[in-house]
Length: 314
Image 1: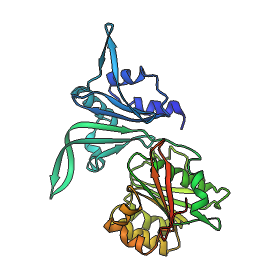
Image 2: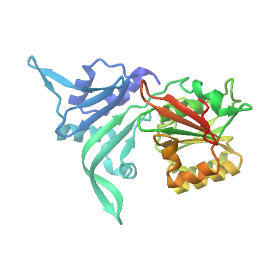
Image 3: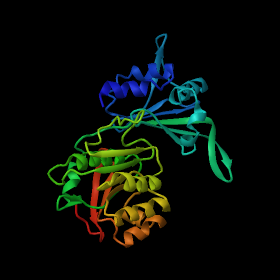
Image 4: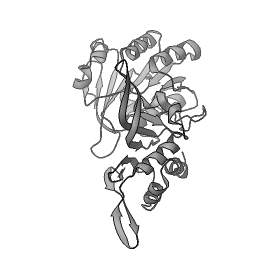
């Protein structure tokens, strides 16, 4: 993705007054990670892994930019193309994905139906998480997650904001195109939240490889079965597994001969092994490799790689 394209995608959804404040920072949008807006609170961004409170100048004086209700309303109009109702399905999950795969998290008053979140009203906070492509960021793990030029069943374990989606995206690209460790093969991607491919009008905005088929905006469990029936993928990739339905679909895909690459939120192997929906997979040694990420120096930093027995490989 061209940097000016990413800059345009982010700036175009900001209220005009917020946009002016951000533009004055002279940012390298390749280093921008988050922009946070909270009504009545300072405008904050995370840039080069550091939090920055934004200010503006007027009449020779400098003041902290405090986010207003009008700025929140205007930003949400741009994000939703003036129709929040059309994004009700996304909002009930707490976010909207925009062109380029950038995720706009939203918080407000929950509207419940049968004790489940139906929608959000009176949105008071948003968090714009900027999607990044980092070609080559997966180079360091291929020697550990391949055997006989085939990808191992691999689970990426990562706390939030540690680069798991960025790593997964580059794994997909390289597995699809092929490299020194793996022969290029067909990859089916279930991109439930439109973060991996960043599809816009059905076309991936991110580079996903020449043998990759993307099922955009589809629930993961259903999507994996659809891919197996229709596209005969050699590898299936999914981001942020979590439900029992996801696990059952993954087991079925493995039994059908597909290789699996998936990611999950977690601090370490111990935490993931203790998750009710995942513990059975770990016990059965379904995954052959576990890649644990951290964010001490930079997102996507490899903390450790384990095999199916839990033995440390690196």
